[in-house]
Image 1: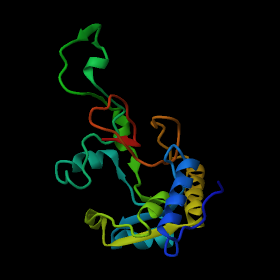
Image 2 (image 1 turned 90 degrees about the vertical axis):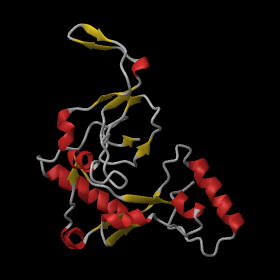
Image 3 (image 1 turned 90 degrees about the horizontal axis):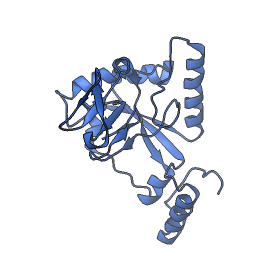
Image 4 (image 1 turned 180 degrees about the vertical axis):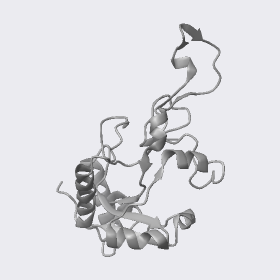
Length: 208
């Protein structure tokens, strides 16, 4: 299957849409469907610098952890960027040569330096999303909490956007991409959500 072009569902019958859904699911069994658009919800004070100057405003992992106490239902997350989270029945913990037993709750691991990792979040809409929704995507009202503006990046502009970020990183030796990915070193990837019963490696791109 060739890389899908921009998808318009307006003139497609329900049968056509179902056929396209099956085609794209067959072509991408991992569920990593081609991206159709990025949405960045932001405030007035950051939108102009993003569009006109290419500046990306970021917050640190520590910021989102501390935000948990103030904004738990929105963006705060005390488990942000855990290196690993283990069920104590699956591991052995030794401290100074002494095995710790009768551990209660999850055993969470996080490297201190990861707290200063800066994170840039985007909402990703892929071709599968558009087909399943039949072109009528409805986002949660909680997105209003990110700001009163939304910047849309779509089509070929997605590749240009990513290429410019990579180039900026290559030119600035003070910028180091996060290498704590669960699989391999990547600049970015879609967030993977795991159940609270999960036990194993986490990373910046995996969370509860």
